[in-house]
Structures are given as C-alpha cells and as structure tokens.
Length: 401
Image 1 (cartoon, rainbow, N blue to C red):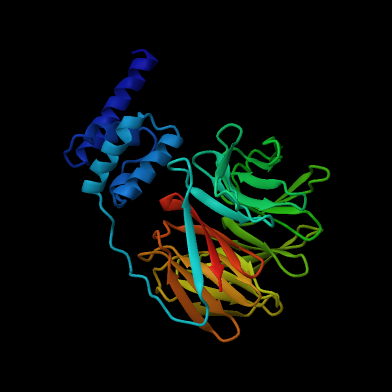
Image 2 (image 1 turned 45 degrees about the vertical axis):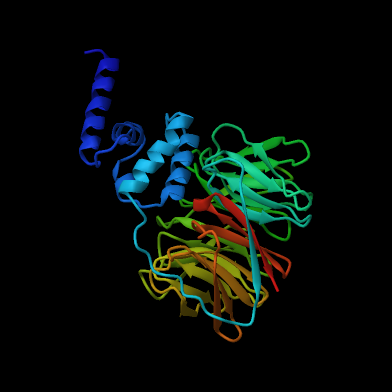
C-alpha cells in the first residue's frame, strides 16, 4: 500500500478510536479529528473549563497550527464546555492585612495568546510574551494601546527581561534561541543555542554586570550570554532536575530552582560551577524564585502548597503553608524589600498573596478575572506589580498603596 494511503488509514483509525471516548454532539467528529492529530485526546477529556476558558484553549490551539477555521472555534468551545465543565478546585482564602491594592487587567489583542511572562519597564510600559501567538506585546501607559511585535518562525516566546538600553530580551522556548528585540524598529537579533540539545530556553535575567543568565528546562542546562560578544556558555546539570525560575542575589550571584527535584541551585558567575541545596521534603517542587534584599532565597513550592525560605549562608530552610492550602499550587513570585508577592494558581479564583517576611503575616486578594494561572510576576519600584494571566488572555498591573 502506498505510504500516503497507509498514513490516511492510520489517521482515520486514530480518529475513529478517539471518537469512541467522546460524548455525542455536533462537534464530536471535529474534536476527535483535530485534537487527536496533535496530542492524546486525554488532554481534552481530563480537562475542564467554562466556555470562556475553552474559547481561549481552542484559540491557542489554532495559533499552534490546529486546522480549525475561524467559524469552527465557537461551536467547538460550546461542545467542550457542555461536556467538560470546570472541575472543582479549592476556594480562594482571603486574608486581611495592612496593604491595599488595586488590580487593573486588560485583554491582549490576539485570542489564545497565552501571555506567559510580564515585564514592567521604567518608561511605564507593560510588556508580555504571547507564547502561542508568537508575539511580544507592549501596552502604552499613555494611550492604553497594545502593540504586538511578531517574532521570527514559531519561537514560542517565554521568559522576558530588558537591558539598560531599552532592548527587550526573550527566550524562544520552541525554537532554541535567545532573542533581542529593538522596540524602535521591531528588528530581532537571534542568539542560537550552541548545543542543539538545549532546545527550550526558559527563564532569563540580567546580573549587575550586564551578563544574561537563563535556564534551559527540559535539557537540564543553565546558560550565560555575554551581549557584547554574543558568546553563550552552557553547563549541564548532573541530574534530570528541570531548572525553572532564576534570580540574582544582591551581590550578583545567580540562584535557580529545580522543578524536577527538591533542590535550589547556585551557580558561580566565573567558573559556572553549580552548588545544590537540598530541601527537607523530597516531595517539594520549587517552581519560581525571588530574593529579598537581605539575601534570603524564597521559592514557591508548587507541589506542596508552601512558601519556602532558604538561607544560602548555612543552607537552613523554613517553610510556610500558603493560605490556599496544600493543593493551591503557588507559582509566580517576586520580592519588594523584605515582602514577598506571589500567586496561587489552583484556587478559585486565583489569588495574589502578600507575605511580610519580618512579621510572618499573610494577606491575600482575589484576582478579578480569575487569573487563569499567573506563571510569573515582577515588581516595578516599590509600588507596582506586573502579572500575565495566561488562561484568561490578560495582562495586569497591581498598584500597591
């Protein structure tokens, strides 16, 4: 049998098998055929969303290349919402406290963009990576208009930061390079990974000397990029530990968390030697990291619902139960002075949490849109936080009063 006929027969067989696991409905065949062509159908049947959530998911899949016409998006979302509604999640726990915040949210222009990382620049602009739309977005603080910068190929922009000249740097998580965007011209300069195995650069941050540090999650590598020479150096971690968030301490030392294990790592800026700190609970999975001005390293323990503090001087660890409980999935985090701000991504609605490391007091607020998973956040000065709300296609600024 010719190869094309064999392939067609295989797809028809796969589609027929997939349809057996779906409820009857007018879009059953479309869902079975389109969704199962890219991934296992269990990713659909094990999920749950309201109609707005499914519209966002279906739009993301179209952005990733799913063969759906624009007029098919709404009917497919209706079918999925009817048969796979939201799954029960813990209710948000709202705690009072001394701070007052105003949370402002805006829709990003392209449906299904999946805003991943935010960036609040010194000119007042709010940037974000539109991972599935393959864009960087910038909200103008004066006009409120969001401009999208289209990126080369299907880059899957993920991490985001800026240099001292106002250029915007991002990790091309789907295409294995670091990108530098000139906001004035829209031109992009690419810095490809020197090792093809380092295919998924993840989170990036500048140290005080202007060196760019980044994690490469599934390839278990850390990277160092010198913007002056363009040289990239990579170091491979000894175990499969999925390096994730990364931050720089007050004296310029990069620290990172290892989401595939119960470890926090430190890398020597000169030798690139890595030192690991093992957390006391083997089930801990630190996902994001922040460093307070006293040099303490803080992490969100996604798996156990805790906020953790590591003292790099002696390796001691102290952990605090997050207000939403052990299944609250704490995620994006940042620090202002000695105050930690982070999100809980598995409570309804998602929350913004404040923790005063001096008093040990928690305070929390509901994110108005529900949040849709705040994967990262950053502070601008002492009075604002930037958030990207992936699942609801929004970006946000939090004014702290």
